[in-house]
Image 1: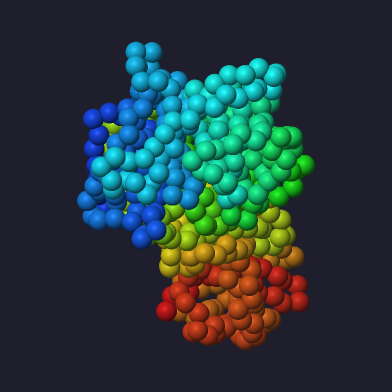
Image 2: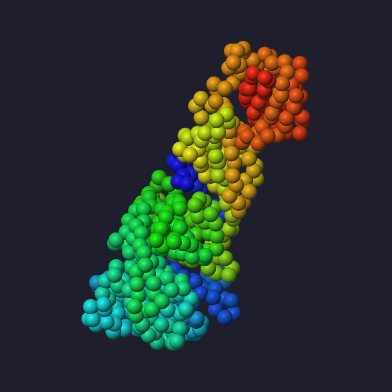
Length: 531
């Protein structure tokens, strides 16, 4: 169900997202002389947590276990705008892309750091420049790489290298992390980034605007299984859900989205939903990572965003923190990356200008509701009905099928109203329930069905309205009545005696529908009860 945003200002739980944070607080910060780029995390054998921060000049290793981050080591490399970092066992693996022309430090190819040595005066590290044969049979030395990923089996995938088309180069690091072994490649497209789980590579073919799905079970004979274009055709990042059924992508374009796809059937991959940070501001998404039910995404000028993706057909923002207060809107300033995988649940962010942020998130499950709007008499779906959740600050229009989905980080009571020209407004109390996808059916009463006897054209009325429960009628002296809520659920039935009826006092104040019937009369009235 695609969401229609009727307001240019996004509200979360009644709060406008012009504020700097929601469900995320600051634990510590560290600044740098040079601009930062990507980031990753590492935890040693005794539980000490480290941030591995890429900078233009090299790699910074920072102890983040205490309230104030402590820089432990800096390993210089070629000056480069792009660095990427991942870990395996007690080793960190670092790549850099094209260095500045004036830089005098040699290309490092793949830098390997022994994390067991970070507290020593001379940390142990080495650069490995492999001679590699490309898909055309030509040999070249590995010099630069844009990105890398290490899977759970101990294979390291290098993306966007200077070899061949810059697809994926595959190395075995499990056998000997200090001396990786080249075992194969996939080189049909240039890959800007990617991740691997099991025997499946999910790659970002940024220049082709595609995500690709590659079978890497045989490292020397990889096969493309499927591909699909992303909304803004500049596919920067891909990440698969824990159950391998939902893929999340980002396009590195102003005003682009975090997009979710059902990939359980590779022959029929379908988009489920998409979401932005600060809609209408043209902020650029960068890197998304799945963390359980949530997706943690870095956006350049708006910082980090947490999205509840438990039900990926309706993505709901449940947290954010702006690491870049001096920039907004479009542009490549601000938050480069966010790492959410520490056991402590800390999130570390690398902001290009502002440096390292250590954040404390509160992960909450969103509340969701599927609203169905129908005609109370015919049961036909009603489109373009305006659905409003007052406290959550949400407004949506029902689709041609009378449907709309709404979600919020809120929980508890709210006021739901549904309005449509030609129909009586419906308004009643609604209770948001975190972690669920509720369903509500709202039956609107057509004004043409109110208060007239269609067989004899005899005017009838009910009064008082609002009522405390006792209702009098004119134009009908006997018959039956049925009281329903606005969803059409029957609450009470009874007999009309001498133009009056008594409704029990067990119902809360709100709007209901009163259906009265006799031998030749069947009418529906909106009735407000007040107790």
